[in-house]
Image (cartoon, rainbow, N blue to C red):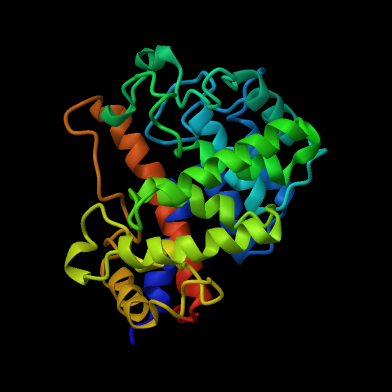
Length: 304
């Protein structure tokens, strides 16, 4: 069983403090240095637009300043992480943005706006109107936020969409594309669903996780769903299921830290917008490094 050494830990901290965005610096300070939630929200404010939505590269692979639904879901992940109440102005305005961008005809949201090409972005964010076909990512995740902040959304809308995404889950096979699984897990783990609905989802998601997580260490360097992605802490509902693989996954994280202390993304934009990608890569490095430090800390794998 490996541990992140004191020197390796200090390198990771140095990377965050010198290269990460203010948002990740504030999140690091909260978890490791008794920082304030107010500082996290202050950093998050730089990404919010007048329409209440979020842009400006909050989703690092999408550099558009204008608001997008996908970037706004990243903000809601932060609201959820820090248990920001529904009457906070950042949350109020973000909820108004979700209501304004909801497409009732398709019972869905547009993931990105048509003017995506006005700014650098990863090739997979090319615009296409897929509100009819893409019924999970990020719709299922958004439904969790509708239920987490019910005062901002009509009860009929919440109930209908919750029923729709849960029904759709049970129509799917017991193996999902990993981003769709993330969205369903965020919905399920939001603790905002009725207990009977949550229980039914849990049974189905346990089967899906069992078939979707890649247990092979040989594949973790690629773009796959590793065990710690679904069980980032020992209190995760899936931690016991992958106990042996998680121990190997933790060793793998420690072994793959870069010389500069970071864990950089294992994807790229190819030849497109090299300068913008260099910035996005650094930012992902900050996000990944903070995430790995939190995971290693939760499993007691850091020597301090």
